[in-house]
Amino acid sequence: MNILAIETATDVLSLALALGEGEGARVHETTLAAGQRQAELILGEIDALLARAGVSVRDLGAVAYGAGPGSFTGLRIACGVAQGIAAARGIPVLGVSTLAAIAEGCGATRVVACLDARMGEVYHAAFEKRDGALHEVIPSELQRPESVPLPPGEGWTGCGGGFATHREALAARLGARLVAVHSEVMPSAAAILRLAAPRFAAGEGGDAATAVPVYLRDRVALKTAER
Image (cartoon, rainbow, N blue to C red; front, top):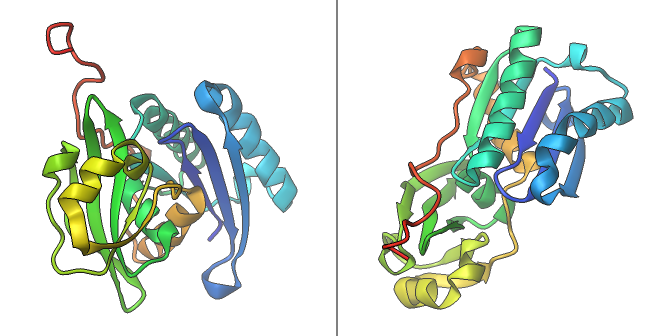
């Protein structure tokens, strides 16, 4: 199965393509600091990635995408493009948590993943890798940095841009539970690909209509009185 993965939850446009399955799969990637131009650039970048790999959209067997949380606009772009390709080709689609993608990309065994959610809040979750598989310890939540749930025990690595924006508050809250912080680790299509492949193999993919973003919030800005 050839799988295309799409991640646009931040201002980075990230694409990955796996040709074949298992350890023998060939993976091609594209990463672009697209800013506000993701909608403008994404289809052309997908075409270019497929061309470099020597395949076309007709050769795809599945599409995975970063479902969120993250930028509302970015999530809609990834979801919409994945939905369009899946519908046109009649292939399965699967959403993957952007926080899980951060944990997978970090590579540590115990990861607290955190993205800045603006409005003084963060998107937060904790994951632990056991027997090569990523397990959710604390589910994805929207929290103020000084109130994030505490993961059990110690030996946790903080990853994601939330640790850059809210460094002091998160450090004070998580304290000695953290052994390292890598705020530069962001969700990537390559990480989404690695998480999605076994799930597709297990039959988890759905049709195009099942592709929906996971926002965790219903508004994007504070009211004047709140500011």
